[in-house]
Figure 1 (cartoon, rainbow, N blue to C red):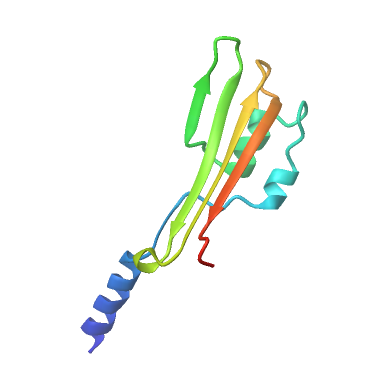
Figure 2: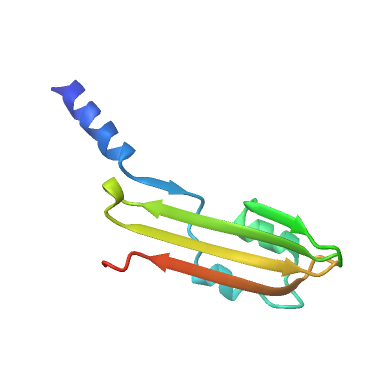
Length: 103
């Protein structure tokens, strides 16, 4: 019986998936254009999933979170992309969130 329960739990866990950490409104509210630094962003959001540099010296970094419910029954996607000036301070940022329209 115990083996059946363990197997059932593993199957259920395999049906759900997430990647990254949820992005909270509190984290977003702490970002101040012209003031917040790259180091402060890294402390708040962790390691970015994307980093790129532009020819003008600006840097773009971004984080993402995705969660899919059991057998695709629900989903949620969040992202934040931040443009930093050459000194490492926030120039601007963009957020997006996609939720399951069935909910």
